[in-house]
Length: 574
Image (cartoon, rainbow, N blue to C red; front, side, top):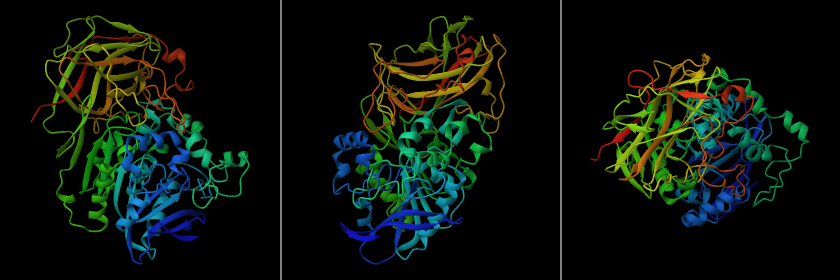
């Protein structure tokens, strides 16, 4: 069905045929004037017809209340979760194409998120869009999270008509970012899929209707629950049956040497648990000769929709999809919103990590619980209950403003009374009165400045991919602990940024369970998880963390040489 609406021609439920005979459904928003236009395409499982304000009510209301500019110049009738608003793009001469993923929304088929089949489908959608009569043949991908992650995957397949990608807060490594942190199973997908994907699986009785057409967003006819269950992946069983980084995960991860398309990679400092790591890894390792990195703060979807983000995206795509000489190719490669305790300050750089970084070791002093610039002479061993609050080490109050921007790492020496231990590291900042400073993160309003994780039996490093500031674990074999025998652990703490004021302290917490901020959990209507400091990125599956193993007492040893320490990227003032 096609209809003109608000200076757009909209084609609802356009058939996009796949090679195996399945037909996916797409909505196409295009200018009313005849012509060939570049395409902004997205493909995902959240139902193209589900209005942002209905399906994710609390998040939408908070967004537009804080940033009214999001709805300036648009009726928001077509505002959809984590993809562009066509009313802001079509007037600029773009065609916006939204495709429901196979098995989701109004597209039939087996629902298998982030599978090879999905990536192949997305490849075919790109090539389909490129040859339509309204298309210029240049296709760009844009979107947040899921709609960003699958950009890395399909770019690795190099579709001929894919001209540019804007990866806004998108994970790239299915094992290390989506499902296992340091080898520890994360419950994120177990929470996400039921409330955000299964509810709009093709044939489900979600009750959601398209705000314009009135049709069910999950298609017709309604299918029995047992049929829907058979027609989708059992994500929990799948992940539990693949505890190591095997082909199951590698098939669902980016291949950096194959990613050659021009790209804008946008990360979130507060995305600990999912959204910053892949964006940094992509910028550093993708083979593309035209790549830019942008890093911001605030909640997950904020700046994708603000004027700041939309203008950035449009300038990028105008250059690569329309060929405009708008200066994009002459801009610095890195744009940082440098995070202070009370504001963000924009700064441009030429590389990541920053060349002028002063990699500074802060040593853990077991006798005083201090973080010091020199190794401790103490040989004291500290014990902690991994189900308790762990151990916290603090610097002295800083004498001057100190910027920490970049990847972070730690080296610890630990033993356990069992044959394994899970290490949770929390990088923190404390005010002069001792109160921790937390930040609005992408998926939680009270995040610390950095998080790191490692299962001790997964401590094996890849010597080719590891860097002093970014240890890279193979996760291809288990190396159990001998109870009571210390081992060295190199722990990756995901990249972060904070300018710490004078008199504040930097802290490192060593724990055996997820961080929680000092306050009651928060639940936002329409968001299917509690927020207590790490959002949905919790690690509490009993099959993965049996208490008799991971509840056993852990010892933190002083170590030999210069271990243990925290390695921070201190940035000198220009």
